[in-house]
Length: 450
Image (cartoon, rainbow, N blue to C red; front, side, top):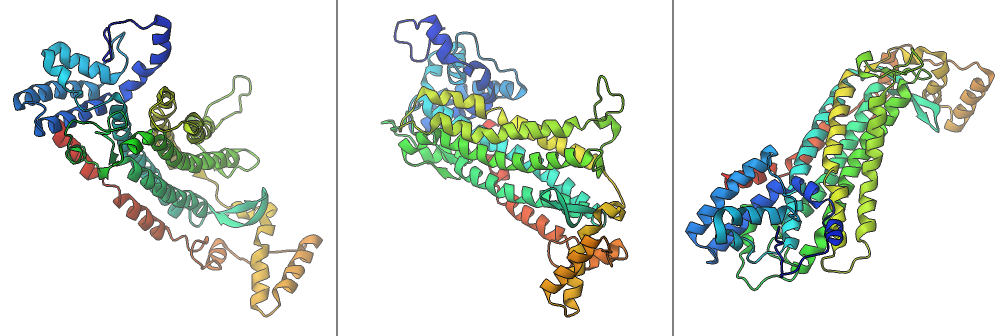
């Protein structure tokens, strides 16, 4: 199969196999986006007089067929074809003849792949935000449902103060709300058009970059053509960092669930059909779902640094090193979204233990309440602290709280077990989500593909 850059000689077979690498496999992630980018590019070429209207119509009709195939998973990259860019152009040329050879005017595979990655990333961010928002909803609902179910809080893995399942689950909801801010920052970097930067130095073709920006629903351009290419690696790293923030949140939640599910704690349980067993120990009901979420999330957290290690010492301009980014980056959206979706399912089915704080092992958790009660009666804080500490040492400490309700009403400030502020956390999440222009982008791409 001839290469787009064919100059009349054949590349050594070993060299070709090594340099192509996994592009044929990984570029299938990019196929729909490469086709949409080509639609926008040739529409612009026609507007500046580099393509006839009849040629544009013929090309768009064929590209729309290819786009539908790619969306259905029926697009393939043939043996001997280097990448998705080559496959699209060669398919057009094979079906339409010389007209197909015109689609690359004013482009390089460098700005094509940068565009594809940004379009792919926008779709991935939208999917991830949706999955995170769904888990957020499940967490806040569970937080409110269990707001009066007390549990011990820990510092240094020692019993510290009274907590609640509502406070615990709400903490992870608020963490996800903050993670959406990181994802929004990544979106703002991604939502700028690199098309027209060509190989990094622009083109003498009279390109209308503002038109392709509008057609593809971008907010703005990457103006400087060198910087547009420097975005390769930086874009992936910024997005991967935002994804790693989400992964860190749900990975920590998974670790909590593993710990709290153990017999030593027995704070939470999963339905038996959501656990796995042991081949030798008949009593085991293992929380493998949480263990695997934790492992996947740890791996996702490594991706930004792995990208940095591939790119940090590269000077400006394109290098083939960047090809390896696809292996690290393209699959990470699927991995994280799978974790978000299964965590949502697991939390929705999680069962919590009632009456935990009745256990005498957790009595000391109420010591701070007693110190504060004595302080409120006029005893200096340090004297009250010593008085309660000595009672604990003698084994004579008893909490004055008479019920769960009595404990909860002692906590009045924002964000405590008696005042979860779930509505305010939800409002923060809603404000952040409203700043993603998903609808605008979706409408632009639907119009282009129509």
